[in-house]
Length: 137
Image (cartoon, rainbow, N blue to C red; front, side, top):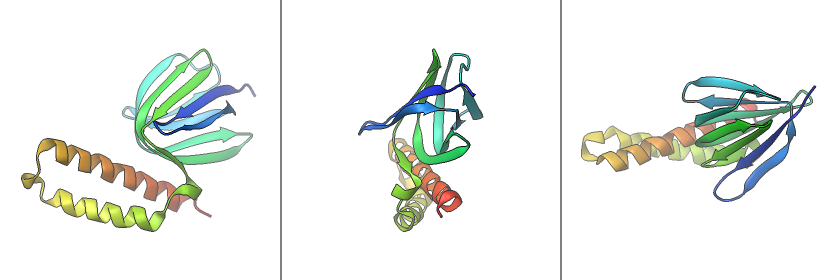
């Protein structure tokens, strides 16, 4: 099977740079699977699960949104955050998600920027929770 090059970059570090078989990502337009020699593509990623598949082995990550670009058989993912399953503190994410959901209940007291930031943080923690519960062994 032909491989594609992937670079997964966050503001903090390069998380991954290797050859893989395929990548499954959640975009604002729905879930996409990218294989080697995929047509050029630019899309916005939603907070959620990112699956990197190599030799029939899945490497799941929780991402907090970002941008994905495919060009010349290289997939570049610029993610706000990206965490491997084993890096996720499930208890902390669940507690924080509960606190954020409580804060969002008083939305009429929040300005639009605060509300948007809280929604984003809640989506990020829900992505962590979902990926952790699905993939943790």
